Each structure stands twice: as structure tokens, then as C-alpha cells.
Image (cartoon, rainbow, N blue to C red):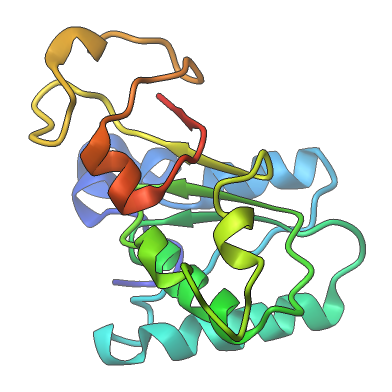
Length: 168
């Protein structure tokens, strides 16, 4: 993967605006937000955690104001692992999309005992993808929901991600 490319397939099929972070960066700049897009795959799979760690340390070193994190896919797993090691990080909120993390990683954690509660608090959110064709969907009655609309979760979901607020 190359820095800034979300999906090579989407880049080819839909263009640079949808297949890269360009649109999101322009929106952040319009709102005068400081933005950083961390790609754990940029240095290769073997260096994913190092890429996230280095990026977060640079971001937090220069941080002014609240720090909101959107973690997609592997970045969600790396973010939770990093928070286990660094309980002092001033993260204001954390949003997951298609994350690889598990709530069990934070349970009974001695390095960061508040992480388990944080990941299930109002400061965290999980955005699910569309249910159509999703083998993990509770059932297909959720198909067609509007973005931001709450979704039902099941025992499997709560075992994996906890009681995190979950929306489409």
C-alpha cells in the first residue's frame, strides 16, 4: 500500500477522491482541524505497530487541543495495543471502522486499567459497514439503514467489541 491510498481497487474504479485520503484531508482543512492519516501498512505488514507508534508520537508531540482518532481495520487493533502500553495518551475520542481489535485485550489490563471502560464509553464509537452480503450481519433486516443510525448487536459482537455504541 502507498501512503494516502485507502484502496487501490477503489482508487481505480472511483477515482482519487474516493480511493485516497485526499477528500478527508480537504474536509479537515476546511474545518481548520489538524489531521493525520496513519496507515499501518505503509511500511509493510511486519512494521504496522511501529508505523502507528511513530505516527502517534509525532502527532501527540505537536498536539494542540483535543485528539480524536478514527481507526480503520488494522489501525484499530494497533491503536488498542498502543493504548494498553501508553495509558497516558490524551485521546479525546476513538472511532473504529472494520476494526481488528478485541475488547478482551483491555480486560484486566494492569498497564492501563481504565482502557476497558474507555473502549465502551460514550467517547468511543464503532461504525459498521452495510449489512448486505456481510456474513457477520445479525440478519439482513439492517440493510438500507441510514449512516449514523444505531444498529443492533449480538452476543458475538459484544464478546468481540464490548458494549460500544454501534452505528451504520
